[in-house]
Amino acid sequence: MNITKIESYHVQLPLVAPFKTSYGFLSHKAMDILVVTDELGNQGYGELVAFKQPDYTEETLETARLILANHLIPLLVQSQITHPDDVTRLFSVIRGNWMAKSSLETAIWDLYAKRHKKSLAELFSSQTDKLSVGVSIGIQKSVQDLIEVVSRYVAEGYTRIKLKIAPNQDVSFVKAVRSHFPDMLLMVDANSAYDLDSLAIFKELDTYQLSMIEQPFGYSDFLEHAELQKNIETPICLDENIRSVEDVMLGHRLGSLGAVNLKISRVGGVTQAQKIVEYCKNNGLGLWCGGMFESGVGRALNLAFASQEGFNFPGDISASTRYFKEDIINETFELENGRLSVPKENGLGVTLNKAMLEKYGHYHVMYVK
Ligand code: OSB
Ligand code: MG
Image (cartoon, rainbow, N blue to C red; front, side, top):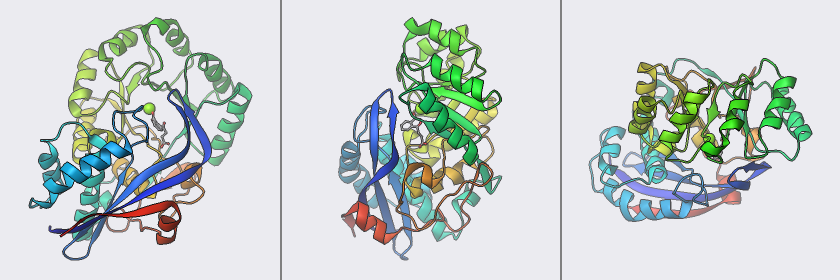
């Protein structure tokens, strides 16, 4: 394929409710939407999901834009690409910068699918057109507030609840939610807020039938997570630690994890993410699709990707209205009996809403042939 143009929109969408994690408060989600055009006029969309702050990972929107403009785009447009896997190989000379790589690689997947008149779901050997999904709930001011929020999502039909926790906002919250919802699939995500000194907290959390405990310790703490896993029954799920299939293998061999939160963007794109799916499938690991408060572009990709064999637990892929009042695509993702539909049209199966891009975004040309 021949790339003739790369454009981007720098978008910022207000969240319907501010989201608090151990990293801080988020009231808006910024993202860049890349539009890659080929010689036939097809357009592939990719979402750059990095945050403004380098807290969840090292990258920020600004560092990713620099890497795209100065390194990834020049590499891509000089090369002959026939399949999206070629992009991963091409980008392998650049270290890290997974989200920057993923934004462009996923746009090429969309473009490739459209050139071949196939949906991404088809390319990913999708097993279902409806996906059971979960919701990730930020830290609330009080136990009472949390119960109200959880009750609302349960009434909407979500089949799995994930609670964000942080020191002193953990056991009491989990205890209350578990006693209100004895049978709910429930898990927690600490976003690296603890260390091994908090072993007693995790031994207590271990008594609430949680499906898993996500990322209790630091983002390179494989050994510490393994030590914790020896002391608790609840599987540990790693998020921030996992940047590649090698990280999954390391965590698995060391006993640091029983499950993986897989975000395509955090591992450099679809081709890398696929290796993790295969590894988890072959080794009986828990696997589910994480979220980055994506716009509809990233959400469509996550739905298509997570509908393949190997994913065995509801992901953080919620309905459009859980995140934003208005989105930058024309379609909406609505919950029906706790499930979202996997897009069927060619490529990602969503179209950009130009009015919304104008309202919430700024247009940039990154490359013209
Ligand atoms: O740790 O999974 C996380 C959001 C932002 C950054 C990190 C995380 C999250 C979420 C929400 O948990 C995922 C979503 O619903 O998009
Ligand atoms: Mg997480």
